[in-house]
Image (spheres, rainbow, N blue to C red):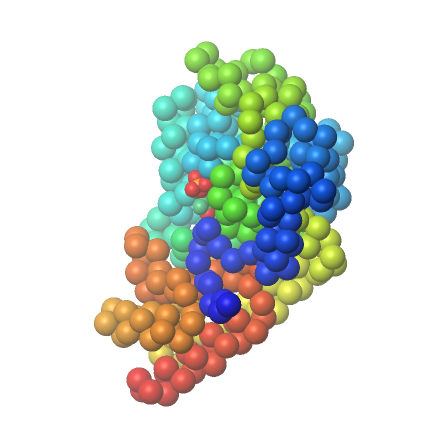
Length: 360
Ligand SMILES: *Cc1c(COP(=O)(O)O)cnc(C)c1O
């Protein structure tokens, strides 16, 4: 067996320990004589899996009792529509546009009401987070929306926007469980798990209870109404069973590693190795304003497209996979999620140093 260092932005690297455990349980999950893939979602064994997953997530994030945890399908992209469907009582919301995912969510919301872009960093290719301390948020806005970590551009909100008392909705797909969070500052936290938490196919949403009602926009499909999912403990229909099972294992792995404080320290250490090198390099440059840098997604360039392509190719041959930047940005991007070991980042930096010497 040979494993590469996988810097994919998503689906992305998972802890080897989790993969090994899943392999061990593949043919016979704890004496049931079947794989979790083959199991009824109404069975006792599965009930324990999903309840345990929720319990561990609540513990890790210190989720207050007045928030529901939902395990959903449809990807983060479907949730772009679920937010206005379930929350746009006044048909008005404020969106902060810090990249493609925020923009897509904003465009989706415009189909359901007035979605206003109250701030944007499009003027500098989303390389920074705009000042959100005093935005023109309408009195009657139903919520303020952010994408907290910008997977494509590599920026992160290190300070949440001043919402002027409005509910905050955050897409945390690419920073989920990377650091401690104060859940009570948000109305809704959600993310697709395939970046930092598990296999594609699961969306986790943490929603304040008072937002889960029958008062949704007319025409909202039953499945997309949060109340349907909450009333049925995410088992209204067949959930993405196997994906939730793997997420549960990742939660246990994070707990064993010391929880979210430990994850944050681990992630800061890794990011520092890479950013320190980028700041000292004569060839490679980070593309993001230093104060807004993400710990998870690190885009960089050489300034020469041919050299970028050469780097990606040689890196791949040396066992560093998926370093090509997003098609909309070019250059390179190293995604260094929770499960990326520090050795992987160190090895990448060593390789970059060597490439720099050879191409000086
Ligand atoms: C990947 C990503 C999405 C889209 O996720 P899907 O599950 O593919 O719909 C949305 N938001 C962010 C921040 C992402 O990184």
